[in-house]
Image (cartoon, rainbow, N blue to C red; front, side, top):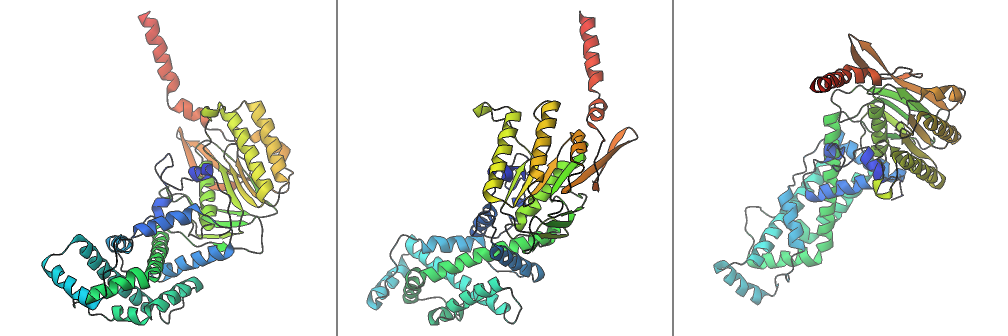
Length: 450
């Protein structure tokens, strides 16, 4: 699988996994696999975004197939866990020597032990698994399935068509296996066909993820990304939303080579950070081949995704917030130099310093980034004064989120508009909380006590 550049800061900024500070994560939307192995495979997929178009389209098409054709793969966590335990069971396979088997079978009737229970239950669960997979493959016969699902079906059918396995599939579930038959199937599953059975289990885990992702897409209104192999630095999204925001406002955006840097402004709480996270999540999910939180998405394949949204002071290294920002910009510049064709998000660039330094550093950074047309940049800022220096830069798209005061309260529409916002809301929100009145009362109380 080709390498996609992403780091822990970005994973945390986008709140992909549960270790994110808010406790909300995108992982929880897809974490509905039936099996532990399916959950582990989901994590593996989400930890390894790809730039390989074949991997991405194969996974997307597989998930979309189960989105369009919901199926119930009759598996359960306990059964798969027990099979794993049985296959790895640290005891010799039961003997297939007829005389020994008869003797041990007689003893087993009168006094069973834990080893024989594990083997007996394990064989029973493998029987059920193979029958389930046979039914699954039979259900998909004559259906138009994507290439990767066809490969899975061919792999399963090759195993299921073996003479010994066919006996299992045709076995009467109400008929109990004799001890000699247990010996035979124990050797078959734990020796002769061990790798085949393990391969089948891995396929089940993979299908478990696809079916879970399809269900998540249907339940949350996600769509399936389209990959543009003939374009670079291209993202077109309609109906973009953040899945963790209930009844969130949906937005549209087009980014291409002609306008590959988005200069985003707006008052505090107007929706800039949520929009940037939504964009980052859509790009991230598209690069694991998963459905995205949007009505429609077309995207070129990027070599990486780097965000700076919740950058903290690095106290352990003695870094101030501003120096941490500078180090982060340097790190991202190096990534662009190494990989090219990156998707970069900066939320409130250089917020950790005085206005003059923030102005100079922001302007210099944005001007330099505007010269790189092979990547996409989304940059939000409160320093709208630099707009005058950037307005004639052809590949910068100026977008903003509006806000207004109605009835003495701030009103936000959370709709992405074209242009630059000069609206400020920070001091109004500060005054609206009555902080100055509280401090004035505290002053009066002190003077009275004195």
